[in-house]
Image 1 (cartoon, rainbow, N blue to C red):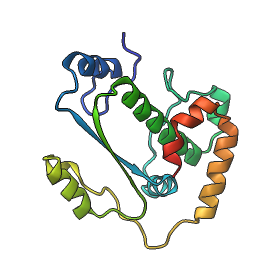
Image 2 (tube, rainbow, N blue to C red):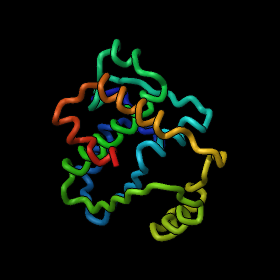
Image 3 (cartoon, rainbow, N blue to C red):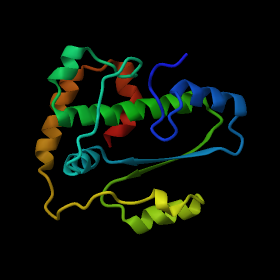
Image 4 (cartoon, rainbow, N blue to C red):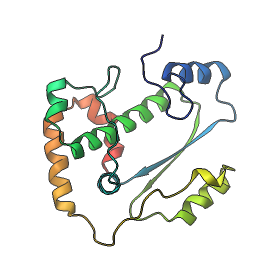
Amino acid sequence: MSTGVNCRTCGASRRMHEALLGEVGLDGVAFLRLRRARLQTLESQIRTNVQFRLKNYPGALLACSNTTWESLSYGQQLLWNIDELEARWQRLLRRFPSAHALEINWDGYVSNSTLLAVADALRCPRANFQHLHRHSRKRMDFGALRALDLDYRAKMNYTDEQRWEIRLARF
């Protein structure tokens, strides 16, 4: 039964991916998670000048009421997306505890050459790793981004369990 949420890469339903992982097993499968610092991720996504299509969809681990969702600014919806991704990652690790997973937290700038070195180490096609936009040298006001994040947290009013799920996204 599909939940209507499909993989952005291949179009298969999320449940299809989970079923395939469960059926095939995880021998020889490894996951690499690059987790970027929260406010730097937010800054990067805001600077792209591309409006990401965000949606508080049914089945989201951090779903909220439509009223709460509509009260969030675009930046706060981006923060929700960061948290939702972290919650899904933690769920995947719990669901497949024998999976090999490497998690890398980074803050600061990661150059294309670093991403290409990771791609080479993973034997991935280099074409998949391209920096999609350039940042200006002027940084955004991180104090304002922190205030946006604090307001977002207050609006979401996450449970203790939800806060535990997304704790690693808050470095």
